[in-house]
Length: 146
Image (cartoon, rainbow, N blue to C red; front, side, top):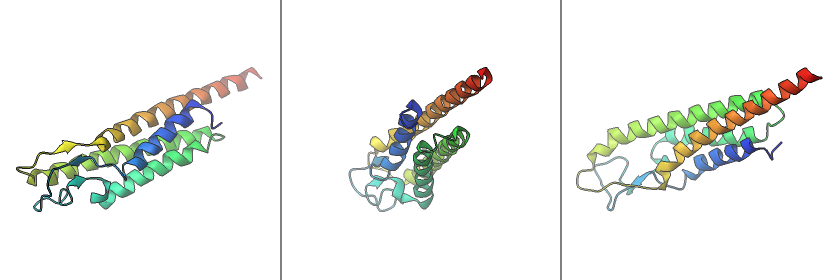
């Protein structure tokens, strides 16, 4: 059912992934021409196509798995794939920042709201997986009683 707690966690994971398209990870006060990621003053998902693709896939997988409540095994797999896509995107984002963020010498880099959304999506996917597996165990135990 869509009313289950795992649906809330999956919606939260999808919302966190899709919110990254509007919220930056970090910003600087003035544009840095020598930097690849801070030419427009912000480091966000739009700075690299791999970040766009991975966060979009993670959000779509989490959103699609909400409506697969009748097939819990597939729902669990999609939650794990969403977790993996978010984890890969987060790792890639950190690597991309480390490689290209070093060109900012005098500018102060400030963390923005987007830096907190990937961990939120990761935790939400794990909690959704946990509650889906609890439901699956409950259904299996009820089938044994019949």
